[in-house]
Image 1 (cartoon, rainbow, N blue to C red):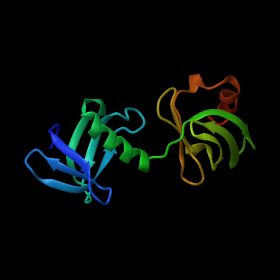
Image 2 (spheres, helix red, strand yellow; image 1 turned 30 degrees about the horizontal axis):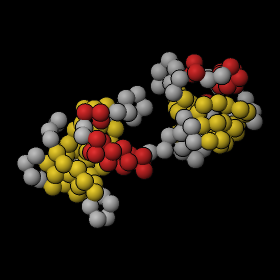
Image 3 (cartoon, one colour; image 1 turned 135 degrees about the vertical axis):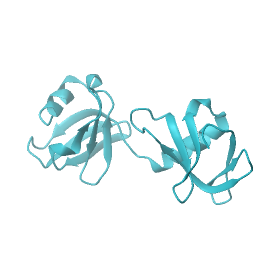
Length: 156
């Protein structure tokens, strides 16, 4: 069901319910981003509880505002990828090491098990997995301050 019209609402249990153009009702649908880091607002799939796609959305911005807000709220409740804005300190340049960082959600500490847990997504974008499985994003290396880049370069 690609790019068709549908209605989306929450049921009394807070689950998303999709009513398709043909009248089919799909309860408990979940939005899934096709490219969560590179293009988070483009290419979303609404899947049913069995994991089958019941609707495709090219761009979140093309949806009616109420539907877009429902989808964004559902995604926000499930996704947690803090963005690193500054690296203040690292305990050691050998792994494992503990990093003191400032993210868009406040100060925190992450433990890096090994350099392989730093994944380059593009020339300027990195994804760092800590020892607890939390993914931290550096959206743009060039926007980090000089000290943060200097610390990070020791691991790249």
